[in-house]
Image 1 (cartoon, helix red, strand yellow):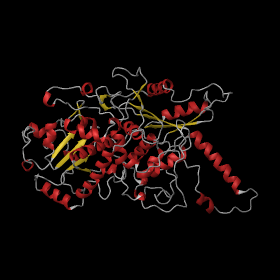
Image 2 (cartoon, helix red, strand yellow):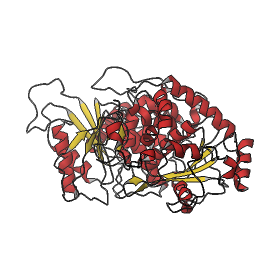
Image 3 (tube, helix red, strand yellow):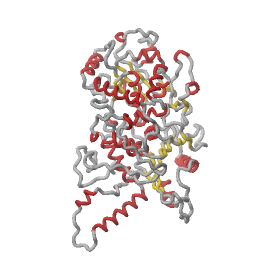
Image 4 (tube, helix red, strand yellow):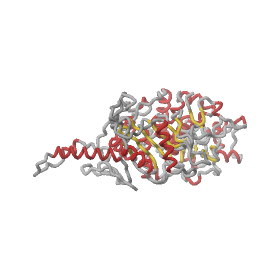
Length: 570
């Protein structure tokens, strides 16, 4: 791997005071220091920044961290966080200082335990979507419920005892939905948010099976409790969770273990738990659980285990019994993941340190930040030359970057001297090298300066690597701090980033299956919501498949996945 170390050009004042006095020299140390910093800043600006497996900045004066994987001087309490001084070309309004995001976040946490919870918003523009007071009320109510029924409580121990005994009791005080992971980090974040929305709608406590590769990524989102599934959970084997599992809702219906046409069936007559397999299967969600009669039956189970690789929140909006409640929670339909994602996901101090250091070193003092996320999928590989050509066509057609000139501009323009930072998120380094070289070797017609950065290039996705996932999460957040975002079609990584930002991206379309290049370079998304790639079969009582994009004004097909569904504001 090509690893380039980078350090912030701004040294803390405390370190300057500790420098030893130079002796026997005719040159003033201040002059040498100034010259060194100017040279370093120029090198950083020209060559861009990357991190690798051992590229975290270190400081010999910092205390030794407890975690052996954290670089010296990078512990959360050892350095003072500087509020980013971001100057945006599109607005002069200062970044939001509302650390609770208008009431979205609870104030019941110690800030030092998870610095990103209250500070990551300082790196973004204010949300374009007002928060519903009803959603705030719903979240506070849920937090109380989770604390009452979560792991370590008497109610949780009682529920586990009943589960171990093979009993599903009537009128249970606490009900649970247990989430199991599937696929990469982007998929997991989208499905966690979907499962949490389902928990809010059905009065369940969300518990999360944390795989080893996911440890150390996220802080706890609920005050006074944990969302981590205890290791002694009796059904803690992910290998048993598959489409053919006899405990799955679809299979229990098929085998007449349960029925969904008898609303008076007592809960005590049901199996101790139900499994929902909400994964893509033949381009459809494999379990049809989004009809009212299904939800009435599922509500009788005290324990539910759920595994999914899809952002199934749009399907919940298609369930009639949830429509009114969702309308109160989300008056603006396209803000679902934008709000829930910023509520749930807060990088741990370890990951937040990576994000903050990189941002402050390379992105903090620029006029505009443009993010490009490029993902090549193995089922539809695209040659590098074709993908790069498509990206450049999109840049030119949408005027995302300044045009190149043949000579330095002689006439001063309004944009002369402005700095645009380009952040590239890709497994491959070729796009960074080409775009950086283009703007390194040629001036722009407007006199603007374009600096190009790529934090890492791992060459291939590594689902089961903790270090890989930490870098991926850091790059999702860095991408979400950009003013403009261009992303690859079908990419859940890109969905999460632009939804966090509340920015409608340009989507680089996939070529048709029988072609090597796309005729259309990119299209602008009409919504900041992620796409549900595989919609459910919503026959329900109609007994025939229905295209809900035709009958529901707030659902349309996705720009990048023609048969997918996305929430819009009608």
